[in-house]
Length: 207
Image (cartoon, rainbow, N blue to C red; front, side, top):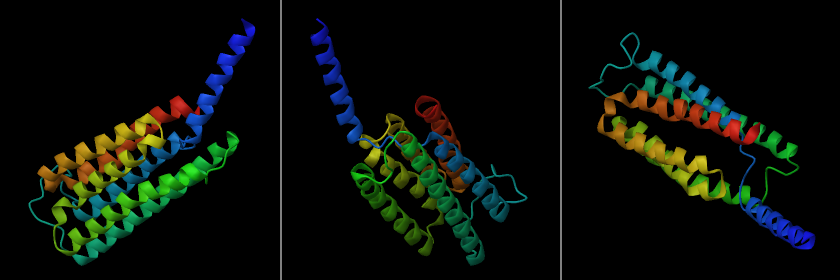
C-alpha cells in the first residue's frame, strides 16, 4: 500500500511540475497594488491639468485639443507606465529568486510576445486617435486593449489575470458610451481594479 501511495504522490508531483513549467508564477501581487497607486497618482495630476477647479464628475462636452495639455498627459502616462513596469519587474524578480527560479525563461518569453502584441497595437491605435482628434475614445481604447492583452496571456498566469482583463474590457466599453468621463474610468480601471486584484493575489500567492 505504501508503494502505491508513493507512486500516486510522485505522479501528483510530476503533474504539478508540468503545470508550473507552463505558467508564469513569479508575478507579484504587490506590484499590481503599486501600479494601481501610481495610476491614481497620475489620474490626480491629469485632473489638475484638465479639470481643475471643476469637479471630476462634471461631464465634459468638449475635447482636449490643447497641444501643451496633450503633451503633459503623455508625459504623465509614460511616467506611470515606466514606474509600473519597473516595479513589476523588480518585485517579480525578487519573488522568482525566493522560489528558486528565474524571471526570464521560456514561459516569460512567450508572455512577453503575447502581451506585447495587443499592447503595442493598442498604443499605436490610441496615438492615431489622438492625432486625428478622436480624444473622447482614447481612454476607453486604453482599457479595452489592455484587457485584451491580459486575457491573451491569462492561460499562462494566475486565474485572476483573466478576470482582471474581462473587467477592464467591460469598463472600457462602458466608458466609450460616456466619453466625457474618460478620466474617471481610466482611474478606476488602471488604479482601483489593479489595487483590488493585486491585493487578492498578494494574499493568495505572495504571503
